[in-house]
Each structure stands twice: as structure tokens, then as C-alpha cells.
Image (cartoon, rainbow, N blue to C red; front, side, top):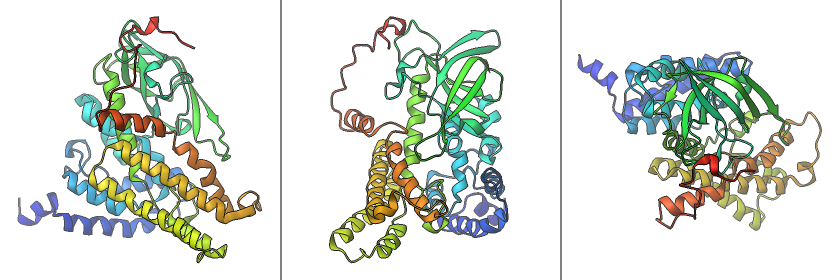
Length: 399
């Protein structure tokens, strides 16, 4: 291998940063006049993969670049403010499902799912929460029973983002009701496009149906699409949640001028400054203090990601920042933040985020769950009492 080839295979961090910046400079031309969100997101992912940037630290045999975690951090630093908002279409796959399969899946699962997932050829959803199992996720009742070369899945999931357009779901199901609730859970990859799966959209108060109910009535899953070991899914569930909280904690603060609802949390402080000027409050000392706090909070988000803090820290900080910024935006809007003309995209943009920010404190684990996690796993405080931890699941009291 020549010296130039060696440099290309393992570039310095500075050379790699230049490569990433050059790619993102070309993104507007790559996307061209693509109009639909799905087409734009697929075009972007394919171009990212062709440039060797879709899975910077993933093994080369599975479609990645095979570079270091430091190279991955460089990519994230540059990409986060520049990538198109349509990237959120693949957020669950790229940020949660694929890293979990990479870390815990069999070689056949890696071969089957990593490369097409990185290229944006398949869309994923997360089949975790149930009507009776949210913060107490281990109380889930969706069941999977082995039937020859398949698993038969029956149950209901809720608050499933993007299920209506997903090809695959990363599923938690109970496979041993005689084991304690944390011990009898298995993680699967479930094909979504089959007769046994019904998706029903849930319209939120924002007017958007991002979430769904998913009903599985004897849905079928190949026997070898189990991630990890049977009845050992809880450890993987926690690992995936850590990936989710890391993804949320990194944030994506993009240009306010795009006025798109997707991928806009927290609201960029840049937009707040313009809004304060319009409202005549940019020189109000109380408002200036609030804006300064918002700016500091925004700057902290990428710094937390660079330091590699516990995922719950980043997730908790980002949701607190989101609520703070949304409150400022609502105050600056006055009466116009409550009622506006139908075609006023500016007002619609801000109202969406004011309404949406509370929900962001719930997804990926509530603020209270994050604080419990930090108390127990970082500070070493005593765990909350759990009298049901060693009781067979079928013997537990249920709603």
C-alpha cells in the first residue's frame, strides 16, 4: 500500500475534518430539487455511504469506514449543524438499532442489517413502550413464542415513532413468563410489512402524527433474528436506551431560517435573538439574561457530547434546555404565540416547538428516570426498593 493509500485509509483528524467539510459543502447540490422528505433523506444517506461517511467507526466489512472513535467525534462535530433535517427519518436506525446490532448481534445479523441500514435502504422503529409499560419498561406483556423456525409475536406497543413508514422494528417481547420480569425478555428484529402487524397513527396536540400504536396479532419473526441471547434482552434494552439518550443528548441545532419542524430540538438560540428584536425586547435586561442563559445552554450541548458523559446527563440537559428556550419563545410571542394566520409559517414554527418540548422530556425516559439512573449508576446511591425483582412475572400484580 502506498503512502497516499495509507493516508486515505487512516487519515489524520485534520485531513478527515477537511474531507467531511468538503462533503457537506456538496450536500445542497446532491439533494438538488428532491421534494419529498423520504426521497431527500434516502438520497442523503446513499451519498453519505458512497463518500465513506455513513458509518465512520463501523467495520469496513459491514459498510463502515473502520476509523477510530476520535474520527467519529470529528464527523459528529461537523455534521450536527450541517446535516439536513431529513436525516431524522433514519434516527432510530442510525442512532439506536444499528449500534446495538453492531455491539451484540450475531455475524449473520450484522451482515444482513448494518450495510443497508447505513445506506438508508431500510427504516427502523423502536417497539418498546406499551400501554402498561412505560417508565417500568420491564413490565411489558407483549409475548413471543417459538414455533419451529419462527417466533410468533402477539401484543401491543405505543408511542412508536415513525412506525407508519418503517420496514423493521427493534422489538422487546416476553419469552419466559416464569422468570422475574427483567430476566424473561428477548430482543428481536421484527419485519413490519406483514399481515400480523397493524399500525395506527396517534395525532399529537401539535397536529402531527409522529407516534403510533402498533398491534401484533401472531406476527412472525425469523428464529435467527434474535439480537443476543433468548431471555437476555434486558441488558440489550438498556444498551439501546443508552444509545438513544446519547443521540438525544447530542442534539441537532440547525439553522432557524429553514423553518422546518423536523430535527429542531432545542430551538436554535439564533432564532430567539431575531424574535426578541421583533418583539422590541432585545435590550430588556431580564430578557437579555434569559437569552444569555439559553445561549450558554446551547453551547454546552456539544461540549457534553465531546466529553463522553453518561448518556442520561446529555439527555437530561438537552430536554431542560429545550423547555427553557421554548418558554422564552412563547413569552416573546405574546398573543401571537396563541393565535396566528393559517399561512404564517414563522408563527407555526414556534408554536410547534412550544407544544413539542414537553414531550421531548418523556421520550427516551422521563427526566425523573434519568435522575434515578444518575443517582444509582453514577453517584452510587441505593437503588429504589424493588420487591418484584425476584418474583416470576406471571405472579406479579398487574393493572
